[in-house]
Image (cartoon, rainbow, N blue to C red):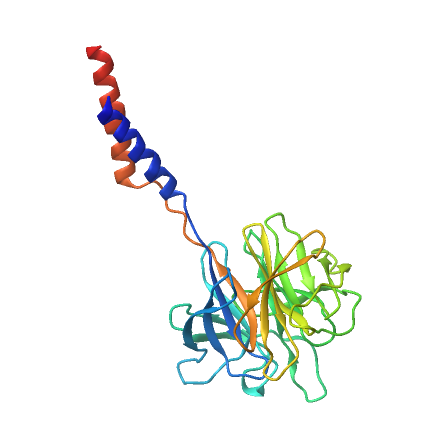
Length: 291
């Protein structure tokens, strides 16, 4: 019976391991700085790894304002900053292991600013079905749907706001679109009409600034407070989705402008686990036959 107990204990432990997963937090810089990709400690905001510069194969650098992992393919997508002009308003993929950038195409979204710079997406977010959304940086914080094959952005509707400051976006597992369209606002977007509804003016541990990025890790909503300064200091926080109450996690990487959690892989039961299960059943049946 001791052997059977050992088998059962081992089987239970492996079963738990087979279901364990952990998300890794990535962050990217923009805010007037060259683009770099980092791994960030979600427990305290500190840098875990400097993955490298966000360059394409030619060495051209891409400051990144939005990051999002596809929920089923695991591909990391990004939106580029409004400057420099050579890379403004682009949709890209990023290799999370090397930080290499591959251009997909321009967003072709909304109006340009006074210098003729096209709108980019201040932040990106996938829903659970793999549909990609973004919030425009120019022409107001309007909600857009984005074609992941081409980068073409299509406005969903008028948010009711006229200028973007922050522009964070995150989508819950239930499909609610949360946003920080301006420095003094935290609320929700209607995914059908694009209309924004405010909840509160969120606290900012950096003493001001705005929330440049949002993302969910499971049911926990994280935000990135880009504080006043040049380059801006940043603070990682958690936000109560319902009330907008902010809890400071810790100071993070200077000039960080985008965050995204890469979900861990939930493995299927292994062949070893299935074999152990068969052995346990066989052992139990033998004991019963001889009892």
